[in-house]
Amino acid sequence: MTYCLGMLLDEGLVMIADTRTNAGVDNFSSYRKLHCLIDEPERQLFVAAAGNLSITQTVISLIREGLPADEEEGRIARTLGGAASMFRAAQLVGDALQIANRTVGEALNSLKIAGGASLLLGGRIGSGPPSLFLVYEAGNFIECKSELPFFQIGETKYGRPILDRVIRGHTPIAEAVKIGFLSFDSSMRSNLAVARPLDLMVMRADPSSPIQTRRIESNDAYFNDLSARWSDLLHDATRAIPDPPFLTS
Amino acid sequence: MTYCLGMLLDEGLVMIADTRTNAGVDNFSSYRKLHCLIDEPERQLFVAAAGNLSITQTVISLIREGLPADEEEGRIARTLGGAASMFRAAQLVGDALQIANRTVGEALNSLKIAGGASLLLGGRIGSGPPSLFLVYEAGNFIECKSELPFFQIGETKYGRPILDRVIRGHTPIAEAVKIGFLSFDSSMRSNLAVARPLDLMVMRADPSSPIQTRRIESNDAYFNDLSARWSDLLHDATRAIPDPPFLTS
Image (cartoon, rainbow over all chains, first blue to last red; front, side):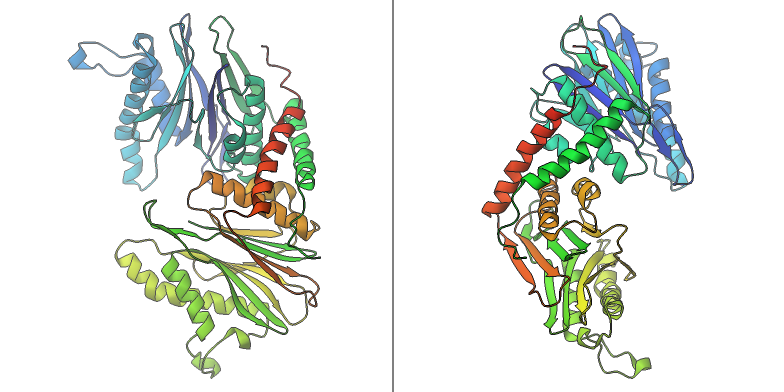
C-alpha cells in the first residue's frame, strides 16, 4: 500500500506521501513516492505515485527519459520540458502509465499479479497558480477544482474524515499541512502498509516564493508532538460533547 | 454497503448499525441490520449483519426458525434457545451463514454476483457479562477480547481512526456511544452507502439493568448536535496544535 495526498488551496499546493512499500507483511521496505520531475524557472512539476512499485518506477523513468516519439506530431521524443500546459503534462504522465500498463502491467497480469498504479501530478508551468491532477490506473485523469480541494491515492479511507471536515480552498497552508499530517497519522495507526518517513512539498501560489520540501522521519519531534497532542485533544473534544440524554445509567 | 460496530467494554456491550442497503446508487433502501434474536431471562442475543441482504435475511430467518437437524447429535432442530453458551450460539450463527452460502450464495456466484456477508453476534447467556463475536464470511468466527475492545463489519475504514484512538475497555458506555456515533458520522459523510436511521443497543454488564434500544432517525436532535459540535471541536483542536516550525510563509 501507500498513501499520497495533494491539496490545492488558495495559498498554494501541498503534496505529502509516505514511503512504505510491501509485498506481504514479511517483506516491506522504504521507497520515495514523492518525486520532483522537473524544477526549472517557470516549470516545476512533482508526482506522487501509489501502486505496484515496478509500474510506478517505470512511469517515472519514462517521464524523465522522454516518451517514445509521437509520429503524428512529428516529434522525436515527448518530455515534460516540452509540455505547453499542465493539461499536456498530465496527458504525458497518463501516456507513460499506459505504456507501463501495456508492458510491465500485462506481464504481471499474465501471472495473475495485480499491477495497478495511480499518480498525483502537481505543479505549475508558467507563472500562474499551481494545479493538481489525479491520474487513474487507465491513464485517464481529472483536475482538482475548488469544490473538493484535495485528491488522495492509495490507502485513502482512514485519513479521509478529517479532510472532509476541515480542508477547504481557503484553509491556510500551515493549517493544511497540519491536517495532512493528522490524516497520515490516522492512516499509519490503522494500516501497517502506510509508514514514515513522509515526504512533504509545499508550493506557494506566489511563484516568487521558493518551493519547500522536507522529509519527516520516524523520530520527527514536530510530528510526534502533533500526534500526541491530537490524541489528547480528541479525548477532550469527546468529553466536551454532552452524553446521550436517552441513556440511563 | 453498511456499517456495523460492536464495542465490548467493562461497563457492558454497545452495538450500532446503519440501515442503508443499495444495489448501485440508483437503487437504495432502508432495512434494519441490528436484530434482536432472542430476549428471555438469562438469554439475550443481538446480531448485526453486513453484506448481501438476501444472504443476511436468510441467515436470520434460519436462526429464528432453527437450523436443520444435526443427525449426529440426534436433535430435531438447532435453535439459539438451546445453545448452552455464547460459543455455541456463535457456532450456530456461523452454521446458518454456511447454509446460506451453500444455497443463496452459490446461486449468486453462478451469476457472478458477490454474495458475501459477515455478522456481529453480541449478548449473554446466563448471568455473566456480555460477549461479542465477529462471524466471518466463511462462517468462522472470533471473540472480542480486551486488547481490542471493538469489532467492525461493512464499511469499516472511515470510522476506524476515532475508535483506534479513544475506545478502550475502561471507556464508560455513555462516552463509547458518543464515539460510536462519531465513527458513524465520519462514515456517513464519506460513503453514501452508510446512512441513518441508525439502530443502537446497549446491554449493561450488570444483568439486572434493562437493555436499551433506540433508533436514531435522520432528524435526531442529539445526533445532529453531536455532529455539529464535533466539526467545531475539530477545527478548534487543529488550531490548538502549533504550526509546523519548518514552514516559512
